[in-house]
Amino acid sequence: MIQRRLSTKNGATGKRILTVSNKKKKKRKENEGKRSRRWRRRGRKKERKKEEEEEEEEEEEEEEEEEEEEEEEEEDDDDDDLRKFWLKSVITRKKLSHDHRP
Image 1 (cartoon, rainbow, N blue to C red):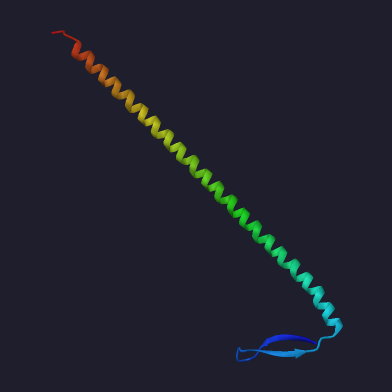
Image 2: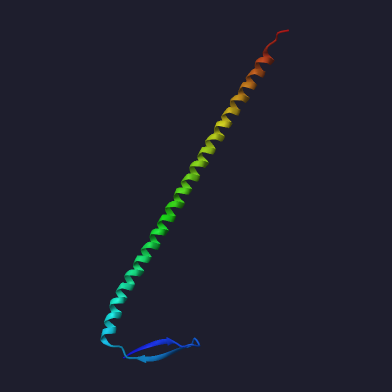
């Protein structure tokens, strides 16, 4: 005899004593193995999905970092152009100020 908890209609749990034949016990044992395999598969699927999502996130982060680096390089190029222009203007001013032609 096996004791089992079963829920009643009103939601309260009560104990009922059930007799189970040996054939049913064997079937249950077999099904338990199958059930655990199913759950293992589901767990593996979930793990795969998580890994794929993490890989996608990493790829997105790498792309964002590359874009930021490109933007920084463009800003550096702009700064270099401004410096060159400023130096040229300063040099021409100095030349003009030192030029004493009437």
